[in-house]
Image (cartoon, rainbow, N blue to C red):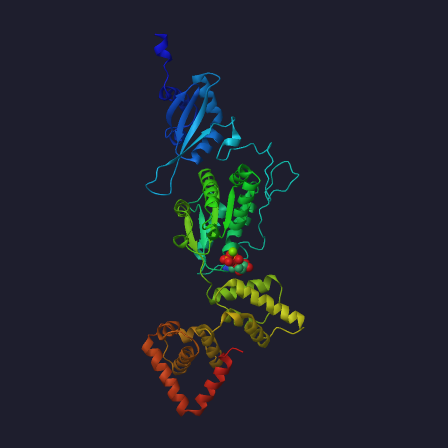
Length: 480
Ligand code: ADP
Ligand code: MG
């Protein structure tokens, strides 16, 4: 009788444990963290339970270790302990899941292949971002104050990304935008916007820990941590961040180990309601060399793109910069810069900076002439071509017409002629197609553009005064 009562199986022991656990955690947590567990082995005083992921294991160890210890001791006596089988998610379909055996915390930390939560107050974390000598762990956020929302000019090119970023900064971890992935080509403001979130979060929630890190640095730190046998410290450090910003994730491509550890950190942060912000120079679908399971997580939140800014936004960006730096720059120069440099904001700012340097060095006033010379040197390597926008501006200035009027449907004679001239130059001085030119000149079709070019050619042959206009305009439009 006594013997049969003592016959314990893994399952029966675990069921007894569960009934106690159930009384000690809320139903939601019980469902999430305990129902998926399977008891698979009982040997001596060791109960082996199977959990679905490393992350799951970490979570249990971090949040429920005391409870788990208590219940196993109650069931198995003071010698009783738990071991885990972690059945890892496997990215290669068809392969068998990988099982890792790990002991519960408090036994043999060193042999465990996964990170162990450690008490931050007693274990100094080796990490370059931490100011040494302070009791409390202080993380230097690595943010640059100039990349604030205030300094970020809004335009059609960035509206969605900016609003999402702003929303995230008001409620980090509390919106559907987690992770927030900001993508776009070089120099369109990804780093600026990502940092703006960090700055705003620090202002709004001074007690939260914000960290900005470039993915290459993240990767290098990880490699160093392996060398120094401090992988756990590395993981722990990143797991305590509240708002983690990882810039240029495309550089994680093909770095499998780094991706693994990032996956782990990401899961931890996401599960604990922390905010993750990522940037990339291409949309998630084009991120080759990044593991599928990471990509799928990137898509959990929102991917928002930044486009190169349109003319008005470029002008606004320059004006803001001119204003904050307290520079006196003629409006025509600002416009010239904005018209000539179309691809990205970094180049635009670079041109402005060179222009300032030039004028200071040579003690010259910044004039349109100086700007033209400088731009020529500045953009020479990038094989510049005159833009349709610029042609339209010069033509409109010449005939003293507002650009909007030229782009409108009006059939007034002088407007029609200016429009035709702009089309003619767009055809002869840019590589744009007839259709593109038509679109830029008030939504005309390609036949209209062709007709315009013929008309201008005819007039040049027959009308001397008209020919003079065209020659003069050509000089103005041609870049120095
Ligand atoms: P990316 O990270 O996309 O390569 P950055 O964020 O480094 O680009 O931006 C390049 C430069 O352009 C930075 O100095 C940034 O402040 C500026 N910039 C980009 N977009 C804007 C904007 N919308 N308003 C103001 N400055 C901008
Ligand atoms: Mg950047």
